[in-house]
Image (cartoon, rainbow, N blue to C red; front, side, top):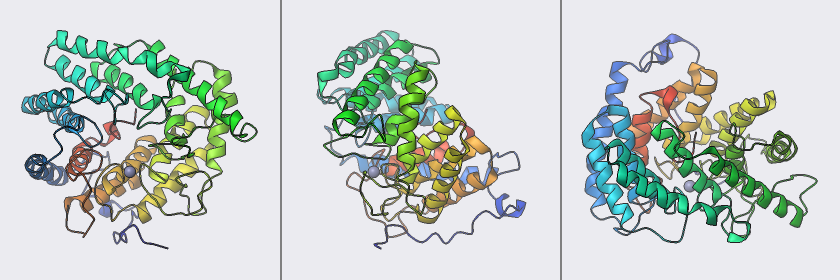
Length: 405
Ligand SMILES: [Zn+2]
């Protein structure tokens, strides 16, 4: 089998205090020394990133590889460190992003909803409420085209309805109030369910999976383009109002996805793909884990939790990627899987593992990894690693950006 990961030579958690004491105390608070190492690296990489961005594509507005992603990073740093110079930097990148919108895509990560949502939040935090409201108005004007059944908007996270939905939830979370009424979110979920039922029927899946989704004629499984990302949002409390639909449509579809698990505990990138190769947030266990944890929270079935724990083992064994340190397909993004398990279980093992992956990221550039196409961006590059290192400072508050709720 082609090796896509670097061998994880770290000693795993052994349950003794001596194994964790360099990283955190029994309450899960990071030691001053380790927190200092993280913050030192954040500062150092930020400088490199700023330098590198001078040669970045000036016309990429997106959260994934472009300016909105950098703005989101600075907004995050502001939220973590409360240093207002980060908010000013966020504003500069927000403005760059708004000046080159796609006028085509509608999602948080790859379309115009991300730039508009991040801009609304940055303006709001700067008490520029008129500009914030203007951005929110523009964001909500996309809603109609997203919920329309014949709009040809896909359903997945990167280019589809769920990627638009995230933008609305992001606004509410960052404003700390229901700025955008819940009905907007519920309408999107209704629309996603109708679309999923229709494809399930058309592709003769209805016996196995009452919902089915595809992107470019391919039935993806993972968080970025596929079923796991869509079900993760459908299972959020209050998003799908009808309990009948949750139990009758969403749950059996989740169960169908669970059956696609490889013997290793990993998941295929697409239905029917038998190659157990990819351990990324975008494809494989590090993305599916969020769906499993959410299913466990929603339906209380132990099997979901044990499948999620198995994802954690896969990530530990195969998650230090030759693709590098990024979020979408890198060690930084993979480490968020441990943090998700830690937040659920408070088991020190998972915080330890996240710290070990962070330690690997502290040696940024020293493992002979491939350089990504956009080396400084949020989802492929250095900005994402910085985001993760800063997020680890408050493990219980950490969230995979642009996705996790
Ligand atoms: Zn990826």
